[in-house]
Length: 100
Image (cartoon, rainbow, N blue to C red; front, side):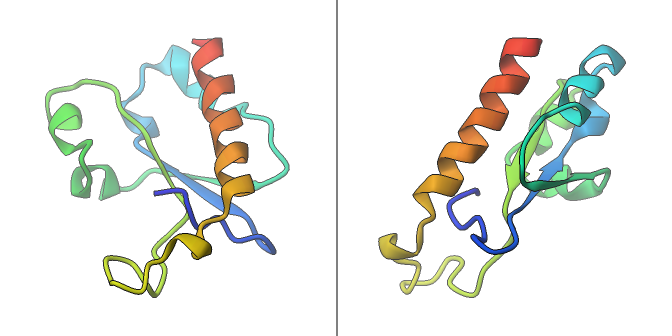
């Protein structure tokens, strides 16, 4: 869920790092961006679609820009999407994948 990256205080949460092999964890931590990235070592990975992978020992991470007031409501309209924020997050993911 990355469509609502805050333009004034961009914070990207990355969950599931603990599921990665040690050799891959450094790639996530070394991501270079102007945004504040928080590396979450929490059980949120088990509250997401990644749950079934993590439970089977398959490495998985997911990124989120947080829950917003319109989450899962009809008011969650297209004009609220931060397209430049999505492009920034896409670059972060591309950097991670190319380093693997």
